[in-house]
Image (cartoon, rainbow, N blue to C red; front, side, top):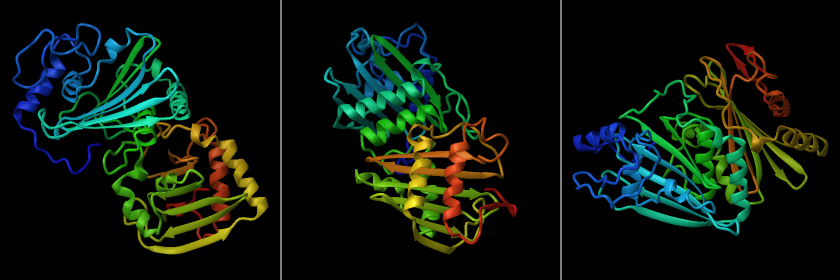
Amino acid sequence: MIPSQFKSSMLLPLIVLALTGLTTAGIGFQQNPKLGSKPAASDAPAYFPGSQNDAGIFPFVFYDLKEPSFFEAAKDPSVISFRISVFGYVTGWMTSVRLDVNADGRGQITSATSTSNWYAKVRRKTNNVSPLEVEKFFQLVDRVGFWSMTKFEETTNIRARPGYSLDGDAWLVEGVRNGTFHYVCEANPGPGPIMEIVHSLVRDLAKINDSEFSIPGYPIESAGYDKLLERMNESQLSDFAKDIDAEVYRLMILPTWGNPIAIRVQRNGDLYSLASRRLDGQAGYETGSLVESKDVALSAVDSKALANLIQDLGFFQMSTDDGVHGFDGEEWILEGVSQGKYHPILRWSPTFENPEKRGLVAFLALCKFLVDKSNLSERPKNKGHRII
């Protein structure tokens, strides 16, 4: 999703250029991709292998952002780099976030952004990344199976259109490791493994916030939930990640035809405090006003039980989305902050069909515990039926 401050400003030449990028054979062509420029054999590197441009507009994007070629970099087996890039066909917004890893395990994260046209000034920013942060990122890349993904991933977002859309966004994730170059393209992406990699690079390593770069599949960070959280007197949970010692979790259950609820727990030493909120509307329509607010301190026994449930869940290893979506059910959103890291997971109607097959037994056990201890007078319901 492209930041809202970038309005439509691209004219016909940009659309023609985008179409050219989609149809031009020879993705590694030696030509200056700037609009109206003269081809030059030595002007641009080969950004991708093969004789057909199957990565669309991205050679133009990399050239304009002055980004290096990962295809060329892979010729050196010692190079380890990852990059996510986005191009908005209507807005012309272009950005890349690149991680380069040194031989000692440390890294540098570099973001490059250009707006509105191919001649706009590129904004560039570089931060250092610790070996521990690099290792956590490697674990994520391996867990989501990046190296075995197909080059063109189908989105799980039922509202998105497959393929390249000139009114949407094109996303590309690339990696170089052990002399291997791999890339994955996705148009108008929804939640899924690719967005987990994007989130890790953009939020955890580059420290770019939502106002600068919004990420599909991370709904709690988007403006659409601001009003809901405001009505519950709740803040963005990701703000807690600024404190390395903070450990906070929040469950939100949003039934289409039922009261939205939020239950937040925060650790203080060996004990947890619990805060619960309930609105009187329906999450799928008018969410209503805050009608119930409870704050309690959990006992030592309950705090230990909660800590065990969180540990059994393996929360930070869970995917953000499991690809199951539907209509008229409920959105269950569990967010967590620990050791300076923020992670959300979204599950649609987890009690629907077979929770065991979806791997949600531990998830539901934690959710049931939170609801039981919330002391809310109304259990979560949808169409008048209790859902947990």
